[in-house]
Image (cartoon, rainbow, N blue to C red; front, side, top):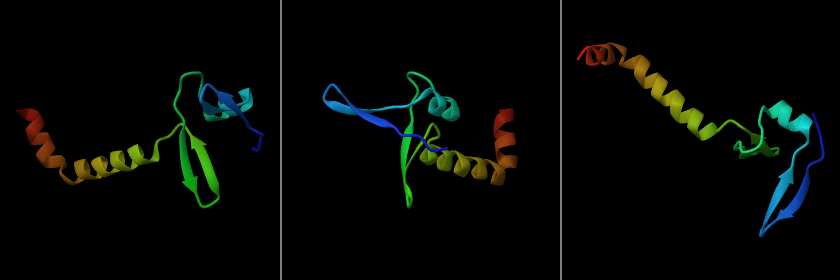
Length: 76
C-alpha cells in the first residue's frame, strides 16, 4: 500500500495527516501512539514498539529458562 501523507503545521510543530485507509490498515485511531522506526529503506510508522517487544522477548526467554524456579516462588 502506498499513499501520500500531508505534512502540516500544528502549533509550533509539524504533524502528519493520515487517511482513513491508512489508519484502518494500521489499526489505530485518534489518541493512539505510533512509533517512527528508521529502517534502511526510510522511516516506518507502526503502532508496535520494537524496543518494548525486544525487552518482552528477553523476559519471556528468561522465564522459559527459569520455569522451575518461578513455579517454586509462585507457591510461596
